[in-house]
Image 1: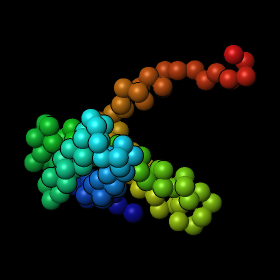
Image 2: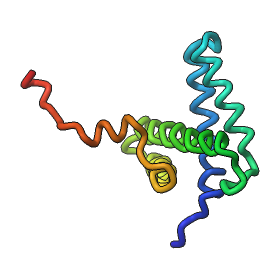
Image 3: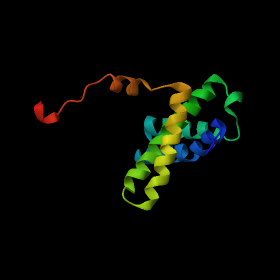
Image 4: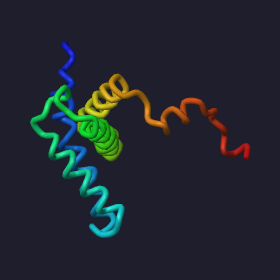
Length: 126
């Protein structure tokens, strides 16, 4: 099966990224700096609709990167919530596709890089 274009993958990521940020803002009751930042990002994601990656400004490329992060988060959470059910497979595949594209184009986040250098510790040994 041929790889989907990055533009199509980004297009698929925008809806779950918007849902993730809407949900986050709602968790704060739609008020406060966290809710405002999430809502602003939601609008920035919506502004990417119909644009190709090649045409994006550097600021829009960063917004696209964040859209992939939040879409991956949304889909992974959806899969986890439906674990064991047949419906869990599709969100897992979507999360993997968003992650693969993000890592290929932008690499790891600072947190992912820090965790990769870490060593697991058995909490019972502390």
